[in-house]
Amino acid sequence: MFEQVKLAYAFDALEPHIDALTMETHYMKHHAAYTKNLNDTAEKAHIVGQSIEDVLSQWKKHSLAETKTTIRNNGGGFYNHNLYFAHLSPNAGGEPTGVLAEQIKQTFSTFGAFKTQISKAAIGQFGSGWAWLTANREGSLQIMTSPNQDNPLLETEGIWQPILGIDVWEHAYYLKYKNLRADYIQAFFEVVNWAKVAQNYEQRRK
Ligand code: MN
Image (cartoon, rainbow, N blue to C red; front, side, top):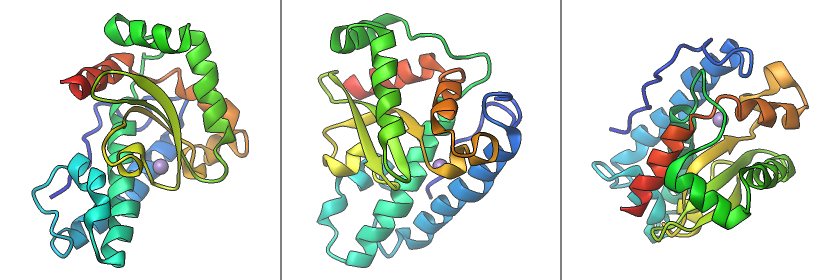
């Protein structure tokens, strides 16, 4: 049984950066639907009891086209939103510290340069999709983007895993920001829990 991550904050806790109705609809409708659809086909796809990371990384081994599509769209949607909701938090934002901060500086020269680069990638993602900060097992970092509910685990067969995800589907921001995706991305950084992202990075390197 694949389960939606429990929110450690209320739907209205990210106001004014992300509005309560967007959060509630996003979590209760969109994320819930991806999760239900994944669970509904888990038995047929023989993925019961597997970790979602393994399911996505090994996506290509499934021979049934229907199974591949379900894992790609709903498995991706399930995983991506579990990542996203878990690293949002009220009273957050700012910059990471520790090993992650050092690696960001080494890779992108400054945190500001990293933020500019990932924001540009998120703004430039045509249509629905995601911008990611990804890590490999050696701890290298890379900014990537994916269309729809694809993600780097699926695209690189597990070599690169996202540790931060910016959802740029319109359902993530349209109620408040309308067509102004760049404003939403700026607001997103006000509610990023960098301690959680750093934890994702640490777990990845184990
Ligand atoms: Mn979404």
